[in-house]
Length: 237
Ligand code: BTN
Image (tube, rainbow, N blue to C red; front, top):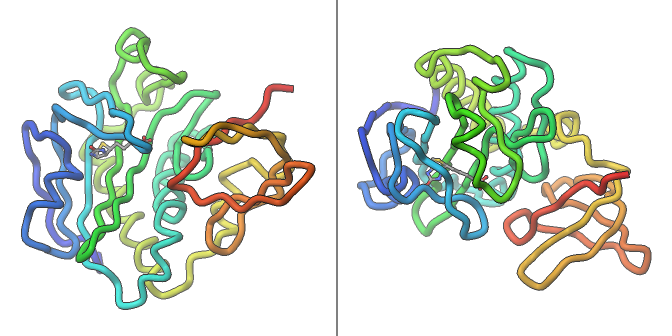
């Protein structure tokens, strides 16, 4: 592998993302924890991190020379993850920007954090949760076990690291193709509801642009959404 250089297992940590913010910068260091006491999700939410039930993993990268490519980090890493999961079941797909879904339920999430000197990419995958474990979440969620996908944690980590290594390389070489992401994220031409801290609105999704932004036609204007600010839901028809 070109970028991922070291794998460290921890029994318990507050958050694997926060851990990698504190350590001396080492490009390609990956940390996997058996449990997190303060697992973080996107947009200030928490991430359920029960002991031994999920994959809680973060990778540390040094900032690339041209930081422009980092605006695609979120969707490139989502593509890397969904490609691995689809080797086991074709039903996995992406919800913009980087949630992995199957059968209308979320199974994995990605939390990229771009700091002054480093990039931390956190990945959480529900592996062995029962429906009961996931019943108190604010959105429908599932696990690989519930979806009858059987893959050992070690093999999964291996496949993910290889895939992420490839996509990180594509990204820094300016070779990541948003079209590939769009293939796994079926949102184009759908009516969607967009929610942000400022409120919500509806519109038709026109697609994803070269910067990974979602283009939405509200009927009165065309909006370009940046992934860190909003979440979307495809409207039931
Ligand atoms: C999301 O909200 O969808 C993103 C979830 C990201 C969770 C992972 S688990 C490993 C890493 N450490 C964290 O605290 N969060 C990420």
